Length: 257
Ligand code: ADP
Ligand code: MG
Image 1 (cartoon, helix red, strand yellow):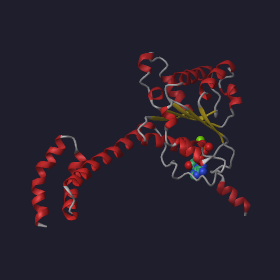
Image 2 (image 1 turned 90 degrees about the vertical axis):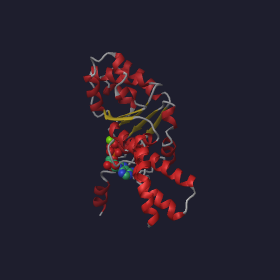
Image 3 (image 1 turned 120 degrees about the vertical axis):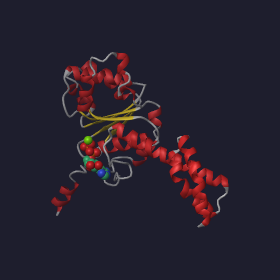
Image 4 (image 1 turned 135 degrees about the horizontal axis):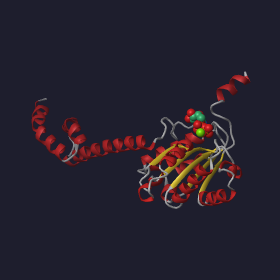
């Protein structure tokens, strides 16, 4: 008890130094860690390690929280809460391999295709969350919002356009491609986006439409759609999911009774 009190007095100066050096979390946790070190008889290097580790892990937590906020990723969709048992058509080990994020470093693309409710958005978001944790920048948009943002930036000069989130992030997620038919202007903006990101950054696209129906989605422009798919599908991990809707599982269960 006497010891802890003495330590507390001396701590103010140490705390001040840590604060000046920008180690605010270490400063905050110093007293607790010091008491623990005294109680458990830690060697000085162990104590120092713990102080630094505390600072590092709090900084990492803050970085992840900020990046997640900036990314626009919806909450509560992670690999941890995805029930692979419900969707046997999805190869868990393939998803786990993608969760290493090696494909993002290689600027590859990922396509989730299938009917509503089978977990396309959930998996795209979960891989986005993983990418954030691994230090990649991520931007999540529903296609409608992405097109809106690109239309607003139509007059921005190319030099400044490069700073836009949908161009500069390591991973861009475009959710719900195919829900709406694009106008010629929208299709051309989407084409330019895919061309720009090709071999520069990764994309995840979720769609309810098979690629053979894409010309129809892209304002009926077959030539442009072929060029677009050529870039998109080069070095692309395709998941063609056939399964039951997770949204309708309760209804299914009720109907069976
Ligand atoms: P899709 O994008 O294919 O239409 P979603 O990913 O939006 O489907 O899934 C619909 C809802 O069901 C979401 O709330 C999602 O979190 C949940 N969901 C879908 N599949 C699963 C699953 N296998 N395990 C847990 N939750 C799931
Ligand atoms: Mg969806």
